[in-house]
Length: 459
Ligand code: ARG
Image (cartoon, rainbow, N blue to C red; front, side, top):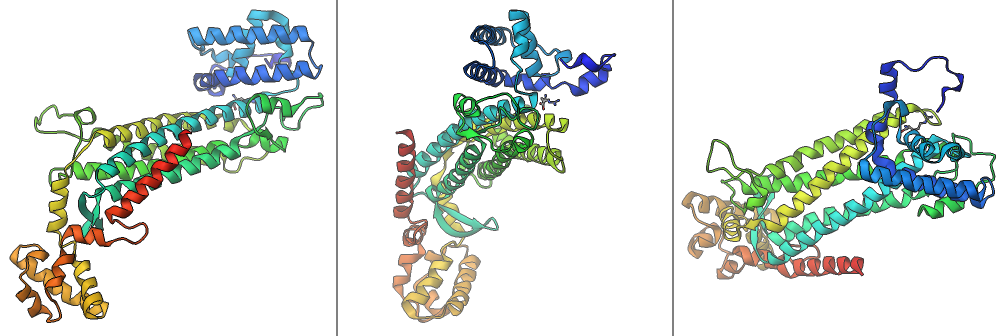
């Protein structure tokens, strides 16, 4: 394709290091679509004859049909998907194939193809994350009243509901979707027609190719357009943040499924056994989601480092943009699907969670708040009084609400029998009615709002 000024062919290793076909063959659909839009525009602008356009267009369809049927051959001599497709086209239609590359370069071509690919990837991720949100909403509704210990420092802190806990992940996923949506909005400009770096002297119509490929508009600066990979980085950065959220949820499942916790039993579909310990049900999928987050962040770092310090415009370093995006996309897709499956099918052991909440003196704050509210005790003093009550309960091995009133009165005479109404875990969660709080009524409101958003999206 570029042999005119060369006397010798490339060294074998040169050929190998130079070739991107082993991975960019994944772009064949986008490459054919971009070429079809380009050639139609060349015809409409009178740059190519109608006859050539018809021949090339039909030839591209034939090449696409071959790719669909046989896959794309990894011919290193043909370097990349763009040269591969042009060579296949020449086999089909002969000399007219040589006119397709008029007024474009592989630089604007690959930038266009890759944007189209990432755009599809963004749609897939958005749909998958929506399904995860639905799963979280369903399970949260089922457990809007199920009390569990809420943790800080992984120490029992205050009782919360499992519904509230699951909806916290729904919030994270909502932010992830909004980041992916931002990425899509910025991505959707068409580089085609920027040519090698400076634009072209042919009277092309960039608005037409942009519209034909579903872009909002053409990119505004040809140098930027052929060297910009922000759209790939936006994708990887959003994917990294999403992977962090998934890994946190995975970690909760791993902890909750451990025997000392016993909060959740993963379904058979989402656990694995041990070849030597018959009692085991391992949370392998959750562990892999946790692990994949590291690899996804690695992909993001890889492309960040590739792009660092590259002068305008295109440099071959940028060919390395695709493997990390393809890898991250595969990993995040699997991670989302696996977490969705685990959330949908897990058995949450609500009685066990409640017992853990009751065992952890998690209503101590409620006792302190009661002293403030009902007896006018300053919070710092109430904190101290409550600490003594917790100590006593701990010594006796009983829950706070099992302490007899006489003992509580001995600690502080201002305590009366009304205090018992706040010492149960149910009373505690029911009282947290501030906006965004864990009271079941609030959790149900949050669930209803989340469902309404999802229904709006489906409409
Ligand atoms: N395979 C190349 C890539 O993925 C296509 C662009 C090649 N352009 C060039 N000037 N060598 O980046």
